[in-house]
Length: 280
Image 1 (cartoon, rainbow, N blue to C red):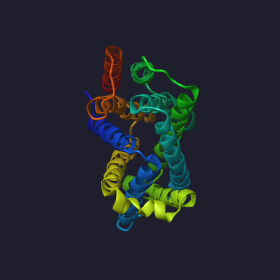
Image 2: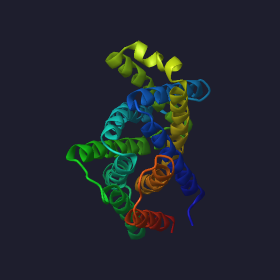
Image 3: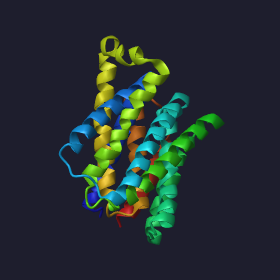
């Protein structure tokens, strides 16, 4: 049986797939990500007013993670410009659990059992299979998605170590890290100007609204993951979170009308089987 932490991570996976679908469904993903970041930064600013600061040892990791998250946001937007959700999302998410497991072993000296290794391999393999079946995949598209996967693995390992050094202040650690999302609107304004940021409030308020909701869903999804990283093995937490790919396939099929083959459904079953292995 999965632990209650594992159940929460699976719920975070659903939330994560949901906000990625919101982002992908908007035509201007850079603008959408910017408004998502504004929502995230606003919530983080509010939370830090009422929480103690993380321990000093966590700050180098907190700062590094915040900066890597900004790189992740940019690479994610670029990946979605080149690929469908059902392609870009699985490649990005599927490549990260094995990288996280390796990073956790090298930098946090974590070790996991053979069954859990099998589960991580099944999840990663099934996710990549979901992405590659029956699609023409460009080298540029795969590179963009893999770059996103590397940034995911990097910030996951950083946060896994950082939150354990935070003195038990996972919420405060998460909020201070998410303050860096205020850099996204600055980046947007630097590239397009302030008028391009504010004009959609009148021209497309529903798009801005969905982006703000996506930001709130995002902060909840990753907040749960950081909480789980306090005590759970990083590779296992990462792999469970990446079962969000199955949710993304479902969302892509139901709401975005993307085709799903039988082989892709079989790959989803393999991913689910890997999640079961992690719960044993």
